[in-house]
Amino acid sequence: MESIFTAEAFWTQFDTTEAMQQEIKRDLSVFEGIKTFIEENHQWDTYIMEGISLHPSMVNDLKQFKNIEFLFIYLIETDFIKTRNTIFNRGLRGPANTYPDWIKEREIKYVESFNQWYLNECKKYEVPYVFVGNDYENT
Image (cartoon, rainbow, N blue to C red; front, side):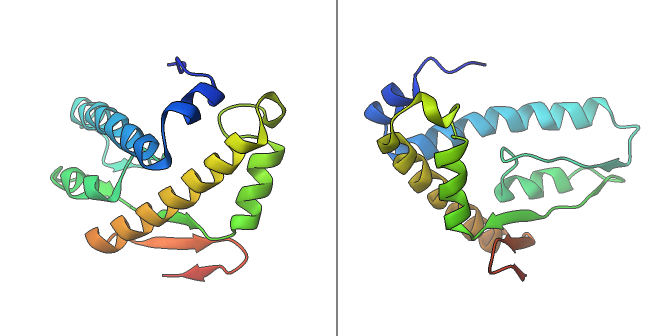
């Protein structure tokens, strides 16, 4: 689904917290689709899923499925210089050269905030995670 906002319109209207809340709300809808997919494909006994839309709080809901193996691990980015360079060189909402630098600064804050949120959620729900970046650390 394509966004109805340009990057500039989006970040003019929403702050980082509001953007995160929208993403989390959207992810709840995505999760309903994930559960339905598993329910309808019950002949499989192992699932590998990747995606930011599968939150640590959702892990227990997936564990309800018996005779299915899930491996949960979250990657937490710790190299914010790399994050900054990626956003300024590649962009987040689109090619970096198509929108102003003030939006990239908001996107950096958004990514850093979401990484912290995921780390907090992993700890809260006791879901394994791995730090990735220059200061790589296994947890």
